[in-house]
Image (cartoon, rainbow, N blue to C red; front, top):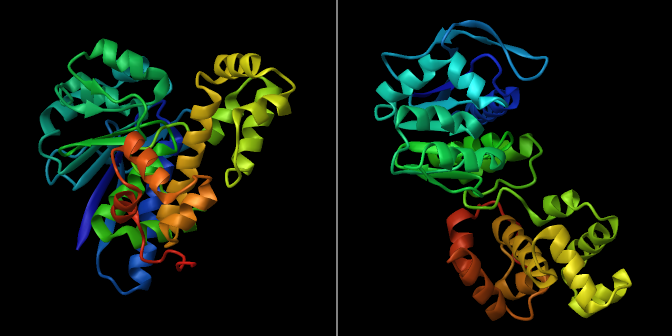
Length: 330
């Protein structure tokens, strides 16, 4: 049995959004073959005009087939482009294809700004969708009937999926592998690709680590790095201010100006992300996870998770856990 997967490209497409998913499905096929599982992905790269298609980098990729019109595949993924307006103008065939086939394909995804093709066809009207953070506002402004979720890694609404920018295409492809063949295979592929963690769709496009790297002030960035390296310790805002050589009031003001969040909020989000990783990749008991993440108790961990994710830590683990997780440590 083979599940058909078409990756749609066009002139100026983002190369990584094609190469990333192709690698995910190819590695999944290798694991299926090595375990004598007869199931496979049938992967094709398609385009309005078959042949070599130039990307946003030095790479050109060969599209071996035109857009499917009959015998539609199980999954279609439409790549995004740095200049989505130019792409929409140059490739109206993709919009027309979406208009005709969006309800017929079992799983149709717009990667990054590729969601604009779906939106322009009307397929996303009344549906939830995401895209790259830099064009989320434009998507909402241009297509007001779309319910834009600006900060998600990927979003599903019925048979339609949309994802954030570039590497989120890999997260979405891994989610498809998990949906088709189970979480263990998805994590095997993630390890092959040296991806630290397969991110759930509802996770923010920006981790606290990435946010800290984007902070302009070296002093604030140093404080953020120290926090991330010492989450298992008690951390007080007063101590951070002293470490930065500022008054508490001035430190809080500077921190908020640089990060658009308070020091206490940054600490709590970082603790949550630490706990999320431990919940997904280990079978450690809740008390140990709370301790390693810097929460005073597993009850406090539960309260914060419930507030932020509308899920308890246990529910989060059950939804995303793997059977290959590290054994529990007392």
